[in-house]
Image (cartoon, rainbow, N blue to C red; front, side, top):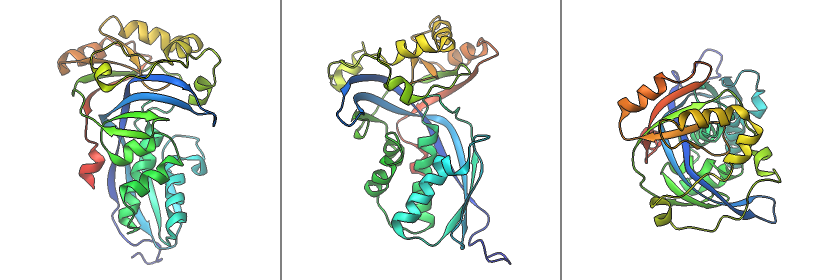
Length: 286
């Protein structure tokens, strides 16, 4: 404990928050509660954010790093820590350092992954005693994608993305590109031109090919730079958008080929080569 009595442990503990991609995304219809029924396949990437936790005895939640200009109260890390503290009656706090590598508004699940890692890590560090189902339930109150990060398994997802079936997808290499624009999920799902009538499919249908991202044309029309990136990457392989964008990706069997494609990327974009993972590094950290 420090001389001022504010910290319980030192140094802090480092935890991973991996990115994800949606291998496809079908919108089946709009629900009465305003959400949409979906089918999608989640896979993690060996790339992501990094969080550091130092416990505090004064109950305060303090975040450093993260997205420049984003108020702490709006950060998913702070929201997750505050929710866990409130639900468990915890008296400890935490200093949370966030090294942000996943681009915001890109469809890679950065905020959801940060929230899930915060819930999982602080549940252990604060000794709250919640199990994965409890944590996933809390996570669903923060965002539809949070539970898949809590469970840490690649998955087939239905409902609003909350009905998860663990799955093993091919571990390919992905070129992931962010074309420099941020896309708001709410804008795309509220767009009148969004197609909402995809028929349900089974996992075997996905594996046999022919799936797509139903949000792509809406985003392409509204965000010209996403369309430009899709067209460029499509010269090297099947280019697909993850989530509601703005990030796009293409799969390759060979990491060297993927890195060669990334080397040709226009310099004004951000990009990374990452390997698909069916088990989140968060599970290994636990």
